[in-house]
Length: 454
Image 1 (cartoon, rainbow, N blue to C red):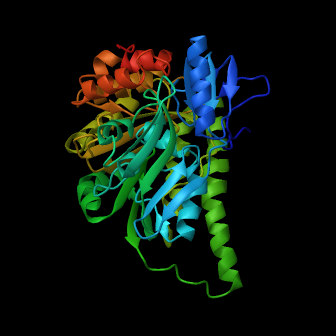
Image 2: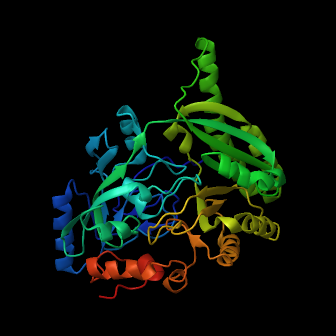
């Protein structure tokens, strides 16, 4: 049985493969800079050779954003905290640092990121560049918390931007898809460290949908998972608190807590769920029955722990994913249509649908730009055909002006995407200024952003 653990994706033969295994690059060379100066040099060298350059983070995007047959850059050796100001809450970090390494460092300083996605494998630069978002109507994406950047542009120049210097570049470049340059440093506005009181319960999906707006408006961070072909859904409500987890009464209780977490996180959600999907691949007719067992097995939970330990969870079973952002007001209707679509497919769906919400921000290419947003994510087990399912979902989302997650599978082009973002032209103008010769483009960016126009 094959599970995918977090890794950088580089193979001994010089190729690179993403986490999901559906994107592979065969670059002429791989660059591993250790600092900004080395990045400047490699960009200038690529310019002299007239080669294109792409940067890869943790490889958790499902699209071809990082794929290139020219120069591929990994920032894995740029993973330090540059500065940390406890009074202001500002943390400046090198762009290659992974979130799962950064979070404990912030916690040790009494700080935390205000919101996180549901995995923490990504690099900071990769997470902001693809508009990674998390959940919570009163909160925003990770990129919205960026107050400063350093970026190397197409000719090797370095631009420092913050809220006072080059602020117009900062406004756009927080979500840049790697198309504007190579980000070397990121300054994040953090908040005092906090815990989350997590309440997870199994509900009938119709009851959950009826009360979902109320849950969203009364709880800091709300999301749910629905298993296709069932009436079961898992509602997760996380409330920010400074309250500490209750101490265990004795050693036996400590062991019970650790066992319960291991059972839920590893045995059920990873090993057991992976086994179920392999069995479903062999005998698809078993999927609806097995789906009906998944969420009740995970069951209810009520606990308090560090924020980043609640936000993010382990994902060891590989899958392919599409996620769409639509106006919150249309979210339930769109979800209902996806439910109906699933019942028309030839192949049963063995992965849950995930639904989250987020407050509006003002970043030109953020998926939540200018609107309260509901996110609907659909998945299939790796190696499974997804085209009919995902194309059907995308057709539904297009009815509501849906915006695809930049790092997840979709079929949009620059022509269709340009109509979904009011400040699309602002991004394109900056792209032409910072990278007039298309040093940082590739086939995927040509498709979704269009070719660079100097």
